[in-house]
Length: 114
Image (cartoon, rainbow, N blue to C red; front, side, top):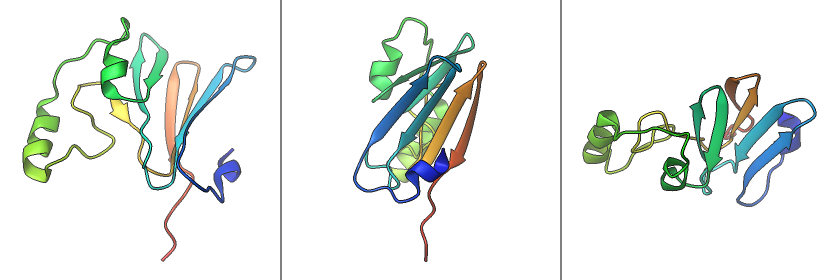
């Protein structure tokens, strides 16, 4: 699957759902221009284009993350994979998430070549 993103061009947030095999794949562009947030709730994957939208889902129970507040004041941003909410995460640029059988695995499909 990672080979499908070997030469990505442009900005994208992608969700591929294979209902037959019970596999969901999430990916975003190599530089992380687009955003894709996700949460695990009751063995299910919930995802949206923003943490606010994800928080609106009834299955996602969140609170403000103290680490995110610290990061915001220290770095003036909240670096991925964290968001302002506990248990809500965002994909980093060039990252792929594969969800199957209640388990999620994150991996990198793209690395910057120096």
